[in-house]
Image (tube, rainbow, N blue to C red; front, side, top):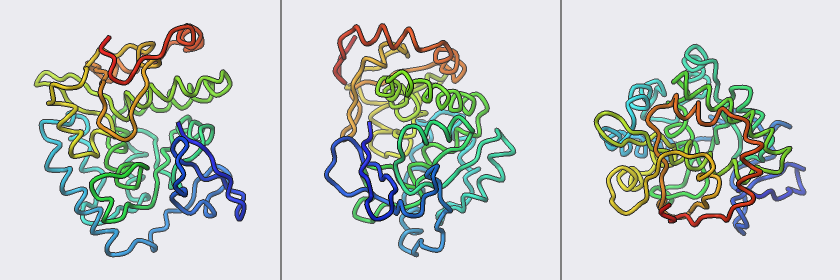
Length: 284
């Protein structure tokens, strides 16, 4: 989960992971009330574009045989590989395909604005990029993680509809004080989900797709648990934010993901609260 830190100078509410003492990333003074802002394209340096190019080049060579077919088919629709793309350029193609659009945000945003954007088919995309010294690992999502990891599957109609329904469900979960339970579903599906294809296990979660090490770990290693997607099991399972996942949940299709997350979660939240939490490495 994320936490908010009030910015006394601007009145904005920067967001950090958990109880982190590190200062929030991004300039929240640029944010509107819904936390969106113009993509500050002029602020990108040649070093920023080079970082994006290197990140893209590395991941592009790794996704064959590790990423799901739908992701690989849509990846070229991001456009530029040698520079950070203009969000508007991607939006021309994305809106035509599924009615979604990318909106820039300064960094992590609170739950209600996040869910509201998703419910309206708007994906919040961080517009800053990591520093060269963070090339191999970064805690917060940056523009590369959000664009490369998340956006290609928004071109898939079933997955795109699932993301919108997740946003609607998030607003309902907020009213039921159940966002922590729902966040585990996001983590283990949209961020770290696996899908079984005819030719093997593949990644569809953005946290896997944007990570060179986890891409192999998730799909090839014998170490992690891999379990069929079960919503209640997911909501009981804690997760790691600073290491490879110890448990992954597997679907057979995006339609299965959509169908299994379609029921009203209200009774599920009530049942899960009566059950013990499970460790991130719990085998069953």
